[in-house]
Length: 294
Ligand SMILES: Cc1cc2nc3c(=O)[nH]c(=O)nc-3n(C[C@H](O)[C@H](O)[C@H](O)COP(=O)(O)O)c2cc1C
Image (tube, rainbow, N blue to C red; front, side):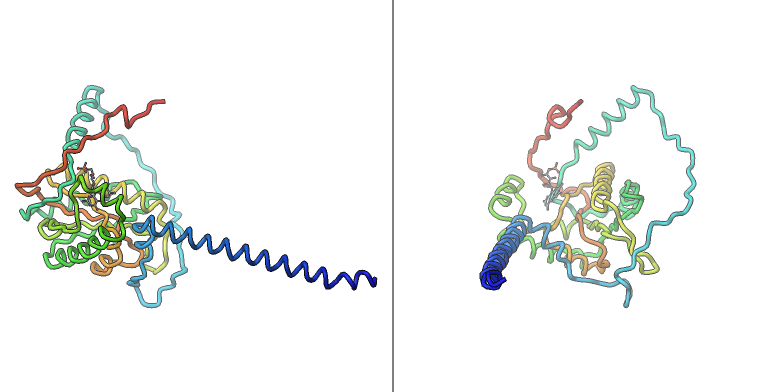
């Protein structure tokens, strides 16, 4: 008993040393974690900064942010479906024609101000809206800008951010990879194109009763819709350039008064190519490099 009470201060001493060692190593690993986070932030500015979108426009005052509603469990009718069944030679012909049409698609950065009928824009957006979506949530909003003043404001925001992107955020490697495309932060097409289509992904649904709805795979769904939109634009003989304006999402969302559940995914200027339009002479990978048969 006497020996035990003699050893107690020694035990307490050892215990204290252990605690200090554990706390120190924890401190080090949390510092490491913070360093890694910082590094990731630096290497992926296009992800991190756009997700820090604190520019909230609430749909209604006093909405309860935590309220979610399940998808409707209604007993949906299943109806017969019999799409066209083409003979093989017709199928081959159609597949070839469609490939040839889309193989002519190019990203065009010189767009004329020649007017385009609104009806055409409406039809190509209807086409994009036929896209499949996770659990049929249709998590997209296509904002069509035709007002020259708003287009110019969009241009101002994008050029301001893009200049910073090229000089600071993108880094030497990215800027040098883009050199062959001769792109920079000056985007005249944002003024000249008769229409700008800004595609927003709804990261969750906002129901009229203020409840939220899960939008499964919203980014993949909206990206597929954008692919269909590009094909529809090509189909009518108009041009565009796929753009993902880095770090412009929050400001453009506020400008266009879109709610907080919508994040900008893509911006497509749409119109006819200008008379002196050029494109980089890029080659596409041949089939054997992109297809694997197992
Ligand atoms: C996700 C994505 C983002 C892009 N972002 C931009 C962009 O911000 N600015 C731009 O001028 N082109 C952008 N492009 C266009 C590409 O540079 C172009 O598709 C590529 O060079 C191939 O050329 P093509 O579209 O004429 O086949 C983007 C393309 C994709 C798919």
